[in-house]
Image (tube, rainbow, N blue to C red; front, side):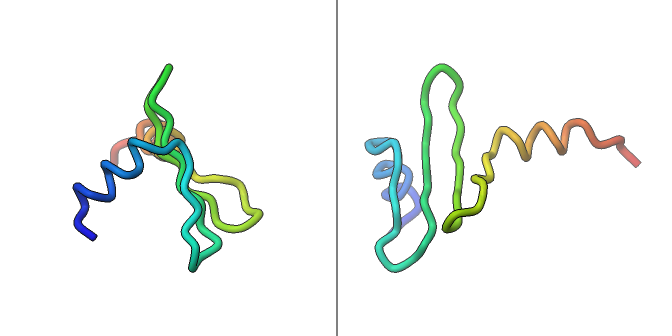
Length: 60
């Protein structure tokens, strides 16, 4: 599956659980766009959190 096709599918659905995997992908559009990935019962990892952490790190 091409990347553009995957993006289109994710934009049409707010949440997608991959049938062969315990991974759930969530896409939120409003009020603030975000992409989260969750593995099984673990806490989700969201792009907004990763960007905030990277932005708060001092530049060496």
